[in-house]
Amino acid sequence: MTTDSTSLKLKKVVPDAEDFLPILGTDFVELYVGNAKQAAFYYQHAWGFQPVAFSGMETGNKNSVSYVLQQGKIRLVLTSPLKPGGDINRHIDKHGDGVKFVALWVDDARKSYEETTKRGAKSYAEPYVMEDKNGKAVISGIHTYGETIHLFVERGDYNGPFLPGYREWKTKASADDTGLQYIDHMVGNVGWNEMNKWVDFYARVMGFAQLVSFDDKDISTDYTALMSKVMSNGNGRIKFPINEPAEGKKKSQIEEYIDFYNGAGVQHIALATDNIIETVSALRDRGVEFLHVPETYYDDLLDRVGEIDEKLEPLKELGVLVDRDDEGYLLQIFTKPVLDRPTMFFEIIQRKGAQSFGKGNFKALFEAIEREQELRGTLN
Ligand SMILES: [Fe+2]
Image (tube, rainbow, N blue to C red; front, top):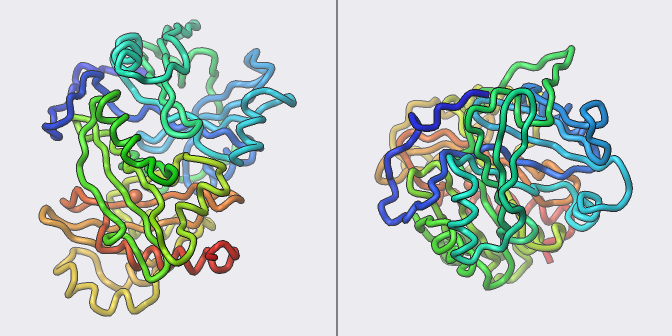
């Protein structure tokens, strides 16, 4: 992979962000999973991710196996252990399948490590060099919420398929992509009264700034509530909303997540498309399951959001939600959890000017999630 990072020094769009790192984008998201081979098949054939690279026994990795898949700029790594014991097995035993690494692409992994650890970040990995015939990469890492890790990845002029130690991976059967382009935002669920601690972490340790906050009045139904604050880096490429549960009559989806994940972790990954109708149609046809809102959601939709370019009928048929802010509108839809435990899910989002997160849809969405919780017997 060749990267001309100097051309990507983006202008600052979030003025309050100190942005001393700086971060060029999300490099990859790595999940620890029970069966990476089958997970890779799911992301390839249901989601349209393309096979990129592989690490395992054939590449000299005796302890674990990793598959790398990519669509647009979104790179997923799926990792499973090959032997009993060790940290990956322990992680899967405790959390089920889930996101272990949110890797951030930087110019200088050593400086990123120094700047964040001197501001109080807990070290995960001191900077180290990975090297093979395709070049060098430097990686370092710090802890964030739960057992989630931020890696800093400096690719320099690395020209291999992914990172040193990986080799190209091809499959015989291919699947078309589904129009997914980049990670719009990644949301973390944290425990009771922990939101501000992690908001402060992203501000102080990472140089991020707060974009918006939602309290339990914004995000509540008759039964459940949560609070959320959105943190962004200076160039706006990295947006991390942080959720915590709030007191409601019944158990909220955040508490359900924390119970099943056994702690804080990544709740959802929002993937951007520039044609949500085509993307969601393709995903649905291949078996990806989405949350459905009642048809009445669409009765007064255009009164609420004004004129939109899309026809109402396909949005209604697919269950795509619409919200408007001062700058434009957005279209969004959420999958059901993609793992056996009711933990992580995906959002598909198409922005048409709006830079917000769909506040107007929170209530309809939460009620849809409550209906799913009811079926699981976790809405108590
Ligand atoms: Fe989201």
